[in-house]
Image (cartoon, rainbow, N blue to C red; front, side, top):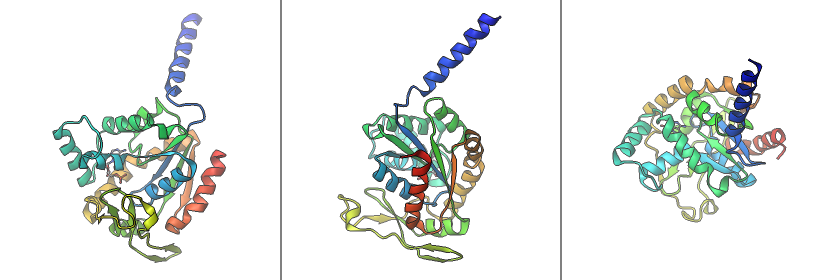
Length: 256
Ligand code: AMP
């Protein structure tokens, strides 16, 4: 009996070891969490540039697949299906996004660590991810729904490089968010003149759908992060100008 228990325990231990073997020593795994439009992508970009971490945005990767600018072995039908899901505000299948994340984690840019932006979005994604990689910190970014909607409606995205800009100026109820306009130094390809477009899913109807998906399928992940003791909350008030405080908070938690 004891022998069997020991064997079971030791194989469990091996499974746990194998589970974390995909992470390299010293590699950091961060998740930037929050509703659509909160600024996850912008903060993740700034943080990844400063700390040399790979920003993995499943949304950006899906948009590249839809546009045909990412190498993909997917059939035309599957790509058309992804396009339909994304433009209606639904969630793409867990298996597809898990595969995207696994591929991005193999990139040399991931060697110091990664910031996951927009992933995981469901409990099933988290549980699949959990079997392969650790989570060192989840930064939960909070912002009121009315402000999120206003920001999303005023968001413009570069059709070439995917960088997001914001044209609204919010100064009320303790919020002071200046617009984020393109600069020459932003991108060597666009040279200060990005081809700005409104994302297909940045319409009021689709934003409402995305918010519903977020509340129903993504918010429940917060409980799991709380149980793991990796959750850190941050209240957004100044948009991109919140970055220094946010960076210091993450740095202190991870001793970067
Ligand atoms: P985002 O750029 O993060 O706002 O994502 C845009 C859209 O891509 C979402 O509304 C979903 O349709 C899809 N998407 C992005 N990430 C995921 C994910 N982790 N799981 C499922 N669908 C996703």
